[in-house]
Image (tube, rainbow, N blue to C red; front, side, top):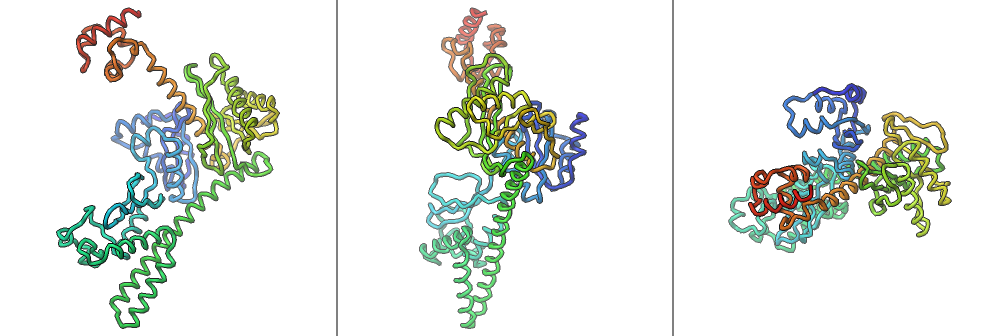
Length: 486
């Protein structure tokens, strides 16, 4: 592909370390999130790949900037990649269908003889869902081990019969207790399933001790075959517990990573303590219509959507980002002050000195000038500080920068999503809504065929008749109505 010098430079400067990369379009929106063990190599594979699919070409053609976040391991990259995809819903992750959520373990308690299934969809169907789990491969190995340890069935029928039993390899290898032919009572079988669930939920000591006691008893009775079987079960159980502990450590490490980012940000800004609560504002007013503002709330490095707010601009005419920022900041903190709410440790404004100064003006008018406020200027990703002080430019590997970029990007996504929603609603109020006898389904056919109301207005009667699903009578009504509006 023909890459801009800016993108080529970005790729060259990307280190060969684990992390995630963020591809952005001309509006600064994240359009794709990926992870890699070696970031530069992964990016090169994107841009130097041959025989790209049309979707891949479209995505790479839309890229105007690339950011990256360095992490300690590929495991941490996987966790953060999933988090970013769920938060920002990048356009091309959705298109490629690789915006996977964490898998769950489904225990079919709604069946006579429950079994284990791995799924990414959680439903209200009477089953028990455990998880989510960060590593699908590790979960699969764990489930396979538990099925063998507790002899839980793996067959697919909801109600297995003797016919299924005759062809079951697992019961021949003593990996299934065969509840379908009453080799074990339904009550005892469910007890085995519950024991396996207890292990997955972290309550493994009781199960471990019980198997260990049974092994000693078998050995004391000189039943060495049974003792060997129980010994193997104990070893498998130890591996499962060890794997679960590693998963917990990964989550703790990621949490520590977020804490370290906040600590660094607090030090960079000279705050008394690391900012635990951060609120960020953005304005979206493409083409000067349906202008909106957004506010997102992050707690301990993660979005807390209970406190998200969106604003229709009410007092500003035309395109004036500065005045719009003044309005939304005023509305947010005037109400919070009246309600006695909890104020953030840091306010982040998407923009440079202009947006920041108007936000500061709004806070001063409310008597809230003691709140910590900064701006983030997109061009050089500089932190803009109040009262004309020098801006702060952090390195691309700075955790503090990663944190405020993440918060800023979420504010931008939230604003653009709301803006698109309002514009879509306005489009429904087009001329086509007033055409007699033209319902939503037929209107959609016309829009898909011609692409815009303007082109429909210019279409001849014969061209309208050629649209599949539009009758001659309806075509005449559309033509007559729209021609009367010219």
